[in-house]
Amino acid sequence: MNGLEALRNLPSVDKMLKNEQIKELFTAYSPYFVREAIRESLSRLREKIKNQNLIEISEHQIIEEVKKTLRDYSKYSLRRVINATGVVIHTNLGRSILPKEAIDRVIEVATHYSNLEYDLEEGKRGKRYTHIVEAVKRLLNIESVLVVNNNAGAVFLCLNTLAKGKEVIVSRGELVEIGGSFRIPDVMTNSGAILREIGTTNKTHLYDYENAINENTALILKVHQSNFRIVGFTEEVSLQELVSLGRKRGIPVMVDLGSGCFVDLKKYGLFYEPTVQEVIGHGADLVTFSGDKLLGSAQAGFIIGKSSLIDRIAKNPLMRALRVDKMTLAALEATLRLYLDEQEAIRKIPTLRMLFEKPEEIKRRAIKIKIILKRNGISSEVMEDVSMPGGGSLPEIGVKTYVVALKPNATPQDFAKTLRMSEPPVIVRIKDDLILFDARTIQEEEIPLLVKSIKDSMKK
Ligand SMILES: *Cc1c(COP(=O)(O)O)cnc(C)c1O
Image (tube, rainbow, N blue to C red; front, side):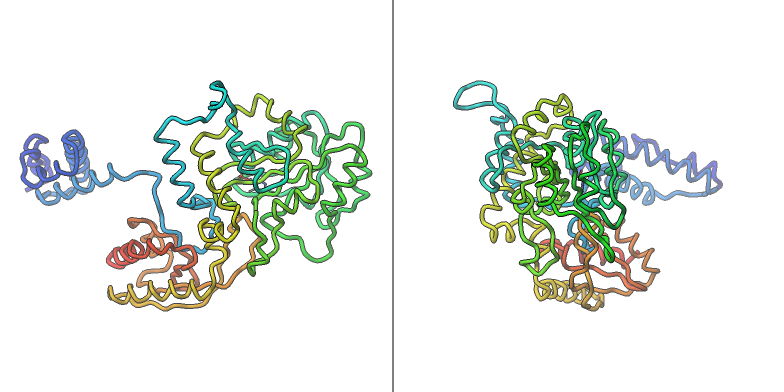
């Protein structure tokens, strides 16, 4: 046989449809997709015959190609992965896993009509944000709340409303880049606010703020250094000092807090991170933070503080462009409720649970994975290591963890790729020639799937 014959010998779509093995596929896939998959597979094989000068394609090859095409059809683009990196708040992997309570609320609200913007008592139009106002007010002593699409949006909206064409004073030590090209100076410029940089990278004094205030000053902004620390010969002005300066001169003080932490991390053996309660307690007029970082809920940007400011922000036409949908509101309300009881929050909010988990508990899970791997003929070691739980959302402070370490036959980079391409995909850390699975971010119920993906990857 030659290539031309191989091409001629390829069966027709109709002939393939009569094949017994193809007919079996109808139980799992619709006739339309099976026919499409056959057509696409045959055309791909035709190209392959031509390009690689193949002289024969077996029926088995064709059927395998059709099956593969159907599997590809049914794969979603956005899907679950196993996070074995140890980074709890991993922006590229979706940041926070929602607590079950939040998922339940999302399903309830998404599968039914709701009182999203309907006042049940009055029987007329209500406000979308009332649902969140109540939930936040139960936790914090504040006047008002708004929620938008994310914290970047929250910062933008505040500046655009309160400081368009006016000056906003920020320390040079706080002109941060958060990642994904979100840079505070760029956001400020785009909002129409005029950036009034003061101080130096390492030192900013109260007199720098005092000297910068003029009749065109709209706001003093403090940006939390969420993903880095300046150490050594440093000085920054405390929020309390800024608040008293702002009060004296009649200028509101806004804090971009970034993470939105409601729990004192230090109390649980982690590093210091200012809490929302603390910042409000120090008298900030306006505070913004994310919904899906340390708060552990859906993507959102909170704006909390003084009614006089928030009422103005709520009237900004951009509010409509940045508004959140009902599923986000449902998830946020449920998550905020969990915070009423801090212990319950830590137990039920996955982000907090993973951050605070005791090393012995992480070790127990690592050992469990090792034992199941062993049962599947794969040898590994449990080792102590260091997790960077914050990703780009918290300073890079390592915390003790336990990992399952595996020495692959391939290069670690190649094996890591095979793991990423497996089903479900597994994202790992590499250390020297070892593949590390950090048990901190591996969920208990994911272990059988993790083992399956590792096993599949070893065969490749
Ligand atoms: C993360 C972060 C942002 C951006 O928040 P998103 O919710 O990701 O938009 C803004 N400011 C600070 C200080 C942050 O840490």
